[in-house]
Amino acid sequence: MLKLTSENFSRGQTGLILALLIKAGTDRFGMNTPAIRFRCVTRPQVNPDVQWRRSMSKGLPIPAAQRGKIAPQLAHVVFRTPQPEKLVQWYCDVLEAQVSMGNAMVYFLTYDEEHHRIAIARLPGLTEHQPMAIGFDHVAFTYASPDELFATYERLKSIGIEPYWTINHGPTISFYYNDPDGNHVELQFDIQENAAAANEWFEQSDFEVNPIGVKVDAEDLISRYRAGEDTAKLFARPVILPDLVMAQFPAPLEG
Ligand SMILES: [Fe+2]
Image 1 (cartoon, helix red, strand yellow):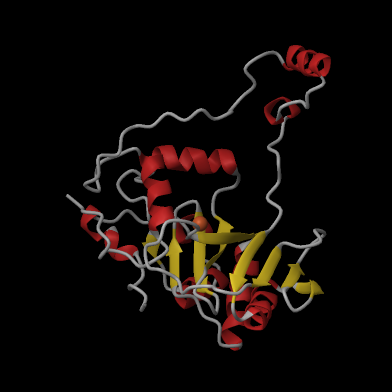
Image 2: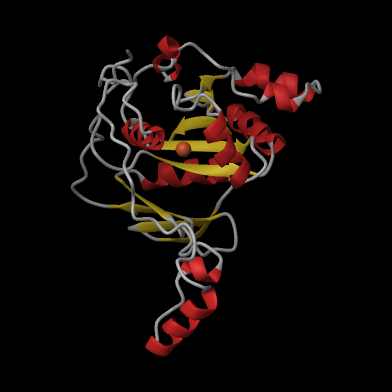
């Protein structure tokens, strides 16, 4: 049986693993992971019209499920750092972002209609990253197509920014980068057509045995994609032996 230990993976991967394990609801990794039931809104509990009238009569906002969309939207991510200028340049490069506001304490970066998607704050008294510390693991950005991700990979490589981990998760092809402070940033594209197809993939794949993915060689993947290989086969996550699952993680980082 596979054992999930601190030696098996590098810092910052705890959150990913726990999320995946909860999704898998399995003890295949040597952890007693019960099938947890969460109190999550997945569908309207009452007729939307009735809910609407109830909320209106009480002066309450209509819940997101009744509005037919998820709210609130994710607005921005904030990093605290002793070297904001380095991080600003890195995120401008990686995300093709612009500085919308900046001063001695904080910079705001945006790459779309939002006033800021990334904030980078200079704060006193910061401490170094602690390996395996509880908390934030990584932030992921989705590209609309393989072409966009692959072009970004090449653009970043040309300026010396390369991923430390390239993997086929199953729902996504993901390239992971470290920013100058060692924060993890995932750039990805969706393999599955939409969320429903991704959920179907979770149900029908070997995700319970392998919630991590299968490493890919980015250069090989890109060249085969551009050579016209059938993407249904090229991007299909291979089934691997359970003993090889933990080996899909990148080598542990120093520090
Ligand atoms: Fe992710």
